[in-house]
Image (cartoon, rainbow, N blue to C red; front, side, top):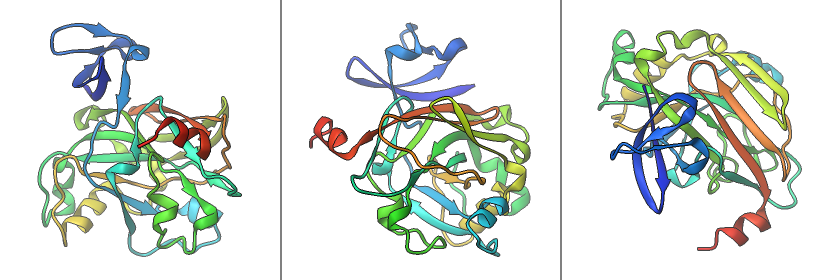
Length: 255
């Protein structure tokens, strides 16, 4: 089953997703994908991995890490399927990152690797955009690189964990304006999801709704205003997002 959060007629609804990405409200009404505003399906903290694919590390001329390189993304960075993300004015390089995301379903503390997947409610997709101009150290991305408002599309939904029985060999793909730019597989992760849950829960408690974004494979490219970017994880979802300029974004999103 797929679970989503949407806004319709000014109200936020938790819904199930049916055939052709239609959503059903609690009162039984069935709405088409284009009739609703898609919201991030989870709103907890996001623990994101850097350089978690060996091919991506090599692409950037780095030695693959020997322990997880993690950073936290705040909920203010999230945006939904079909929404826009902004490119800062006067930057040289902004790239997408197609990522599989594990969504935690119950409190997890001191979880052993062999038990870890029992704590996963389901999976979703994110596009962890990065502003490479501001990157000082790939091993520890700073806030300007990874925590900008509305620069992490998440969704469109959460697929129940039972419907993705093997997350260790899923294809990841990214398209810009319909052209395939990135293709990889979760088989190339350095640290898999059970390892990451064991690692994080060894020193903190993961809470329901928290997310673990597991990194991206090689194949990055620059994006500019006007681009439509689609990221897809096999068996999980296809997440669509459009790039606008900084001026256009803040003109249309005034506080």
